[in-house]
Length: 340
Image (cartoon, rainbow, N blue to C red; front, side, top):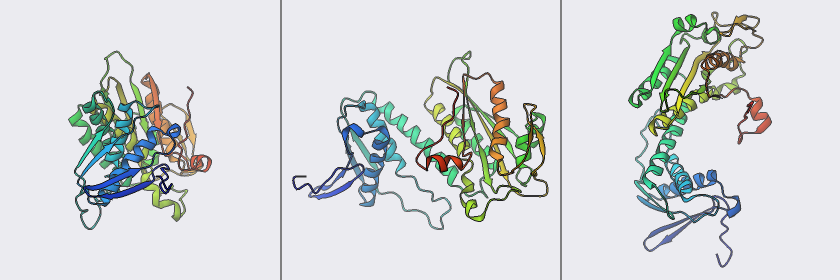
């Protein structure tokens, strides 16, 4: 520091070997620019630095901060440490080696309810890792029916009521747009409804809706080959709202949450919907199809019609809906559209 060789720019790594082990420094940049997100990343960097050196125990000493409560800082760093361990190894030919880092201790100033903060951090990290795991899964094991089965399996231990609508039930509920999008695939569409009751019975629910296209070929309006590789992640909105619902139940948040997840594979097939088709949505509106690669707004239209009928406190819809968002905002921001 005296020779000005160390510049503590955001996430700068300085590992120093000592007689007793390692002193690992992570830069946080200017104090006025410090944010919860940067602290989360700093926690992940510290844990990865330790892991790469086969360190088994890590003591993280958090700085005193002017703009963040010690509880908030501790929570963010803990989430970052936990997320650093995520790896998609399920489909690797060889099993991943067990991580060296077994114990992390966080040292901070005057933290209240430390155990609850760490429990919260753990639930948040588990939710993020679930969404990542589902998004990383290949489309052959993850399709509408298997996604629905995963929601059932994860929701049951947390006393979340889970209902799955198959093709017959979708037709009965006049969810024709979901049926049309899924008609081109041999793996039929589904709609999953989860209900978490953590608030008072009389309280209106927050309704979460997540786009669940488990693979998007574009249908008849087929995508170019270069655009197909990432289309297994077109269910990221569905994975997100499922993970949020499970985390709310895990933490026993005092909220009522109803989650609607429309699921379909958008594939080209003789039975699939066509350009020029006119479909009747659950709402009664008719929709003319001019591009079968605009499938996300179709399944969401039916799911949002259901949400509107529930007289919710608010409706939050999460979707990988259009590449135009990336064109407009780049890959570091999400587009937010709201009437509030």
